[in-house]
Length: 133
Image 1 (cartoon, rainbow, N blue to C red):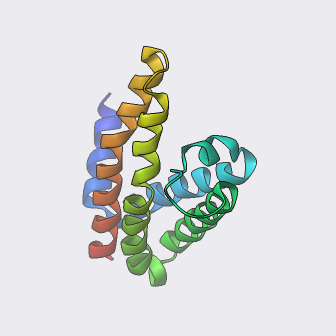
Image 2: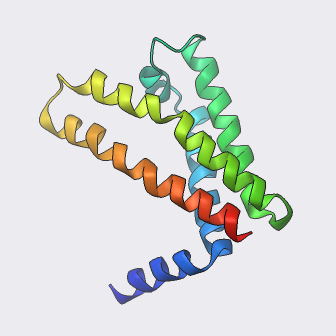
């Protein structure tokens, strides 16, 4: 437990470590957009114009690009700000997931609802990286 607390404390105080953690997350999720695009397609709100698969791939490209840019000190500041914007831009899909899963069994509802507040620490982390770089 002490190790987890120590790592979290280091992430808060070290923008470079936080950038690496965000980069790993973005690179992993971005790759998933290509390896298994269907779950991402399904949560794209119908109100957003465009083909859901194209939007899934575009967001995957953005995540991989930003994850890569977070690893380089020269591009980290801009990538941090752009990552925060990306996390805001994909929030409607998380809200749509709640709407789509509302009639499913309770565990699905819990997963959909639990995703909503996690977007805010990701936005904070991206801004912290941008401001600390």
